[in-house]
Amino acid sequence: MDAHQDKLSNPFSMDADCRNCPALADCREQVVHGYGDVGAEFVFVGESPSAAAEANGVPFTGDAAGERLQRILSELGFSRSPPDAPEPDLQNAYLTHLTRCRHPERRATDEEIRNCEPFLNAELRMINPHIIVPMGDRALRELAIEYTTRKPDSFDVCAEHATTIRGRGFELVPMIPPADQTNEQEAAFVEHVLENVFSRDYRQTKGRRNR
Image (cartoon, rainbow, N blue to C red; front, side, top):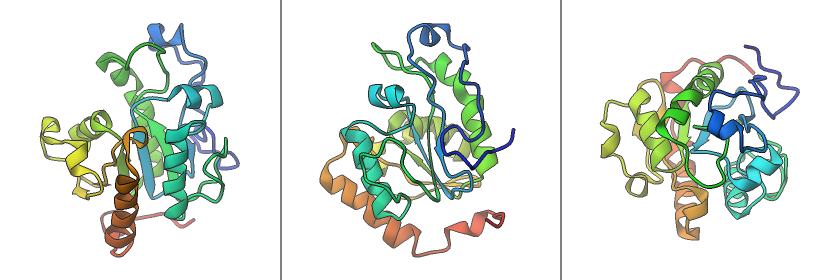
């Protein structure tokens, strides 16, 4: 699987017609694969696309929650476009989900998340980030199974928001989902990354390719 960094949308050319989850494939508008810089040191992982992201085909765009995340990315120096941009100009950040399809009436099932797991695992292997930002309890707990030694049910994203969790090969910096954040929580996340992540050598656990 090769990355095509001449494009930010689905740069790994993952299957846009995936039918591994028939119940989702029959009602979705489109598959929403990852978006961003394939050499990113930060990967942001949500649960599943919003209605706006599904319509646009780009994660975390097209609605107020997307604008909040894009504003955070801009404050961290990861975005060079306005928060309402339908195709953000990202650097050093990659946006993705546990599941790539949206059901209009319910959350993804555990089986649907398992079906999508190879997509996320492939992105993380190819990108090899230093920091993973799980957005929400479900993303945090799913990633905890693979990348930490703690029990998944010991995590609470509200308690872990804007903190750093040491993982196996990665560090996790959990975030309350943008749709549920207050302005104070947004500011706390930005402050934590600027003062506690950027201020130290978070790259120490990984070797990086030149780019």
